[in-house]
Length: 151
Length: 216
Image 1 (spheres, rainbow over the protein chains, first blue to last red):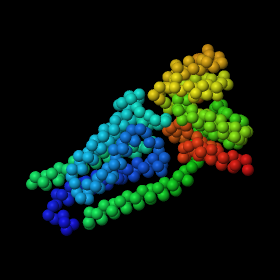
Image 2 (cartoon, helix red, strand yellow; image 1 turned 180 degrees about the vertical axis):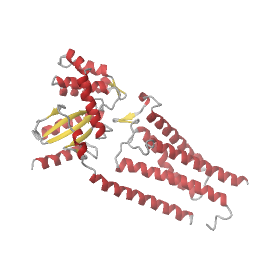
Image 3 (cartoon, one colour; image 1 turned 45 degrees about the vertical axis):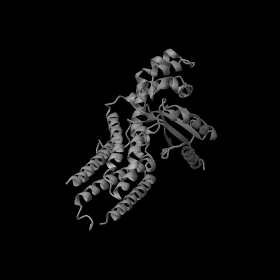
Image 4 (spheres, one colour; image 1 turned 90 degrees about the vertical axis):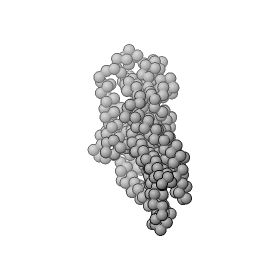
């Protein structure tokens, strides 16, 4: 902590980014656990969300050492893509999007849910919440560091 | 705490958590293999279509949807299994119409079953899925048109598939499927043991084990 005293806001911004990485990594491990260990089938939409989530595990640490707030631009693109896909998936499961608009592979309809916690928390919902949290942390981290620059 | 230390320790914690979850799950999986005794009744239904010797000691129960591509791929493999153990293995088919529109198609299959023609009918539907399944949605009218090419009493088939008797049978299968938590097709049970790691090799292994145990 000795280096953090002169630049407190940078440190705060760093921790926000760090938590975004913790979330992305936990999400990655949890999704791998369900597909590779529990052997739940992975539908096409889940794959698109994975494509957006997994790279964050590697990209975010590169921006932590040394700290680079510009990472929001690169990671943000992935987060927005993942967030939109997750939203589409949630709406599909909730039935707001008609069945025939649903991509499907080898008998795994994406509207089928395999996991349900507290009655509403299925995989797609968890993914949406995670992307929302990561996106918010990235933005907060970015604003925190830019405020520091202006002051 | 130093930031790099924090980063490394979080990595270690996450990996440790993952490995713990893995160990816990593997432990539970082995205990949760068989169907619980109170759900055993849901596995087989009297008069469900059966292939193979009726009194065979090994029963493969398949929950299937005629519109499901994987079910159609497994169909010849199941025939091979019945042939591999003549008189020892039988296959029982249970309806799990998970695809949209499949509800009516399985009723047609059951109506064909009443005339003793379940197997030719299911073989025809599996073989021509591209003609009556579009984007994973079944078209019952196209399926019926296909069934018309079989030698059946077609007037009786049309009456039967819309009858209350057939509807009740399908309802029973769907209810049993829910009891056994069938969420995807095909789902296999060999003498009550579910196929946990899905795959043909794994199914053959499960059947091999069951045959050795039943005929030792």
